[in-house]
Length: 390
Length: 248
Image (cartoon, rainbow over all chains, first blue to last red; front, top):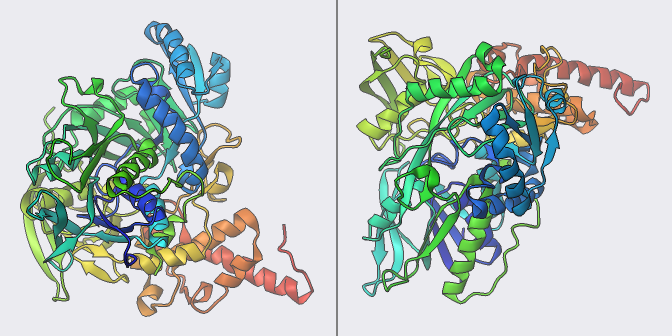
């Protein structure tokens, strides 16, 4: 149960951001309740590629996101090692276009403080014998792979140990206002019991990612977030030990990651209005198969194990969703005299979820006049299995 | 080429708030190469938003979407529809057995995860220790210093299918025993043998091997349980002669 007399923060959404935020706010002395309409990490978070970004993917096009990624990559390796395969990654050049991108890449990585090491063809093939033998050059980068549900559960377990309360299968159906433009609670349905109730709150944080716009629209607010899905395809052999990236500007099917006994290729990018159900398009799966074979030809002799879609929450509404930044944004809806005691956090990457939580908790503390520093970067998280402790 | 379309009926177990369960039928058009979880998700999205089910990663790394499909435990995100039914066929979908049902297809995993924690299984392991000793070697690079997430995804299918788990709530179950075995192989820690050497541990297993039959992730719990018994018996005999450490 939440502690008495502490300010009560109610978080909507138990993806990476909501779970990390629950941990951060609980550390700063808040009573925390997390409402989630489904299972923990059952939206975008669970269906992520599982790539612990070094930031190198964005170091030429989106340096703000790249810097956030490498900083958080170093922190997550320290606090969440329990669910990360950290074997590093390679950026590989296969053709002239890739080779001509290399100087820009090296300069971008240096500008963003990402440690890279140039490898010869022979060195790259020695590290990863299944790599396309046509490889022309490669860089080594500090990429990794993580288990998505376990990363979310590790933050949630750590939050629970500090008294935070998690309510999966509890869906928010509306906001309760005090008549003077401040949120005082939420209308909620307990989906297990199929019963409605009211959840009081001193402050509400909308951490619903690709759904942030839909939640905000319930009280007439606008959050400029674009759900931008992409497809991932998993194959049933672990053909590589390191993440393999195509050495070029971000594009479709340019990242292949190892995970357990699998490899997973991703991804595409397009826009949708509603992230609730996104079909897996067979033609996109075919395209991923072709792209995966370019990087690792042995994929041709490997069976598909799964195929799935996940909707990134991208900030903005530009025509070309690849041009939207991968960084995150925190909105105080009191600005412009709209709604008090409501904050939205969206955008970002799985890799940056802890930083997203830190910035959001800073804003929440500032709004309630509380001075407490973030401590989430220091200690390893509790075992993810303790989320289920009594 | 236009994908094949099948019409199938999902007969889904529904249950909430202590009421007795019933089955509700939904008929939908599917591509038989889609996975069972895709069909369940479409029922939620387009037919009945009150349906509750567990899922997260959709590619067999998280273990959340285990269900009983036509009487057999399946990880639904990697079970192609064509493997479990035919055009105009029915898929009967039920929650895992031997777990408390919270509603519909959602079960309470608390006791299971507590047993897994007690097994002390590290979820990340050096690659050469992550594979089964009876495995074919991983076809990737010689894994110098590489690590990976272990095979057990804690989906609970092995506990759901286990006839011994059906007779006893206190049995720690195949997944936790397999976890203790894997951790013992990696560390040689004697306390893991002591933990498993118990009537609700190793000796509750009746060697039905159903766990290994349904495991979607190569864990082979039954083999691990039998092998852990050998380690326990060997350790008991050695301790009779004063040995404190396991045989290297």
